[in-house]
Length: 172
Image 1 (cartoon, one colour):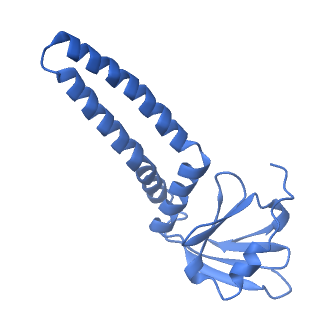
Image 2 (image 1 turned 90 degrees about the vertical axis):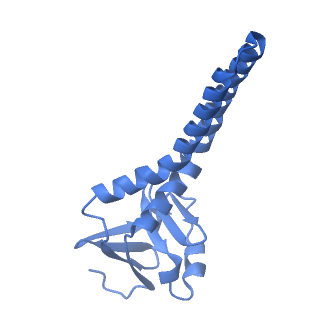
Image 3 (image 1 turned 180 degrees about the vertical axis):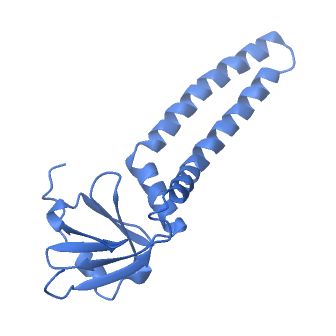
């Protein structure tokens, strides 16, 4: 237990919508997912171009072009819904974190997270990155793992405090 009082305490619950939003953000912004979608679409466009040329030269019904076009639509739809579906699946499979309440206490040089009766203290110089979205702060310990701090639960003055944390010290 900490001897001094925390500067800020934020209590929240790991809800599905926050978990999905966090995972979608990480996947789309940190793991080159958009680059992979572009590469996939360029390959499909090349295939589609070849099929169109073949259909035009054959003079038959352009069934190959129609099938290829439908394939492109299907692949893009799957690529768009995949991050959400994977996040929802991971959330429902993790029984220890699903709908669990947690609290984060912020001190001058570290924060303490209490979840499922386990307390973890993390020094600010171990923070990989702090990401701010419209609805949350993500305090990242690596490229893919972090703590979700919902803005709606943050007390007044927390935004200035979180923006003042220097995360440039860690070796990336």
